[in-house]
Amino acid sequence: MRRLIVLVAAFAVVVAACGGSGAVTLSAEEEAVAAAIEARMEAEMGGDEDPLADAEARRCFSRGLVAELGIARLAELGVTAAGVGESDDVFGAMSDSELEEAAGVAAGCIDLAATFEAELVSSGVSASSASCLVDRLDGSGFFEAAFLAGMTGDESEPDPSLISALVAAASECLTPEELGIFLGGG
Image (cartoon, rainbow, N blue to C red; front, side):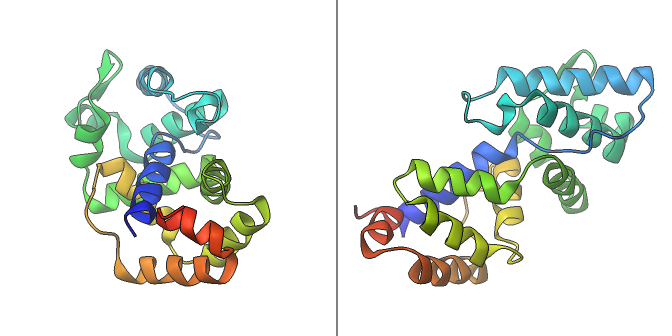
């Protein structure tokens, strides 16, 4: 079970830095704030497989976040054209509704399910099993919850209903060997 929580946490960290809505119109001042967010995300990238490696995803999220929250609220959170505070601090200071808005922006820019599927495959789960697992979790709220946990740095136990959905899907989709890998025994 610890491996499962670690995998969920790793997925959340990878995904948390991505997202957004690129088809928005921003003022010059808003564009400057979006550019600062985008530059911070680029600096925090974790390699080519990181969803942040995609410049369009960074741009989409930064512009969408500015459009959703506004530059006045972002400044209160420590995000200005002059610089962006620590991600955990910024997201940790957001209200629940702001976090949900940010998650919606992210979901509009990156494919959260595909990112999780790639994480599974990189951990040793076959592509077909990973696809099955992602299909079973689609619509459960799992991917969004993992994203929110990553944005806030929340390391507490995930919602039991999401863990139940994940375990049921894993039992259905993974071979015994993959289940061992997934749960940390392999």
